[in-house]
Image 1: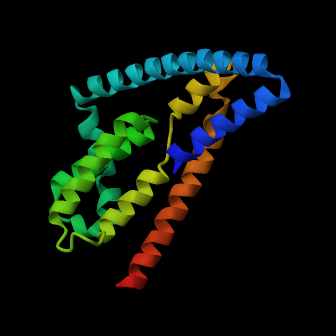
Image 2 (image 1 turned 180 degrees about the vertical axis):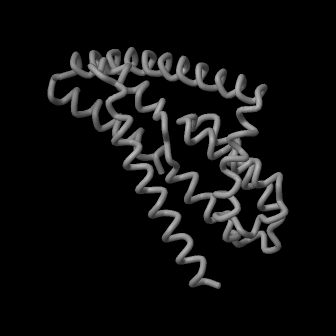
Image 3 (image 1 turned 90 degrees about the vertical axis):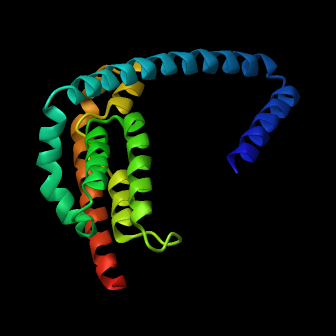
Length: 192
C-alpha cells in the first residue's frame, strides 16, 4: 500500500510546486531532506555499531547467561507451554534482552528465530500458539531501559538534552507491556 501512496504524494507535491511557482522551494526541500536523511543514517549506524559491539562483548562473557537466568522465572510464567523447550526460551530471552537494551535491530532477527523455533513445535501450523501470541505482544510492547533509537534521533535533531526521554519511555513501556501481558493472559484463558 505504501508503495502506491508515496509515489502519489510525490507526484502531487511536484504538480503543486509547478503550478504554484514554488519549484525552488521543492528543490531546496528535497536536498535538505536528503542531507538530513544521510545525517540520521550515520547517527543510527553509529548507535547500532555501538550497541551491537556491546552485545557481542556481553555474549563472550557470562553476562548474557546471568541475564537469561534472571529472566527465566518470568519466561516460565509467561510461556507455560514451553516447559521443556529450552532452545525457544533461550531465544525469547535473547530477544527480550536486546529489546530491553533498546537494540531493536538486533532483536528482530532473534525474534524471528524464536518464532521459527516455536512454529516447529506447533501442531497446527495455520494457528498461532498461546506462546507465539504472548511473544508477539511482549516483542511489540517491550520494556526499554535504553531507548537508543529515540536518543539517536533526538541527537541528530540537535536536542538540548536527548536523553531526557528516558524516564517517560520507562513509564510508557512498562505500562504498555503490563497491559499487553494482562490482556493476553485473560484472552488466552477465555479461548481455552
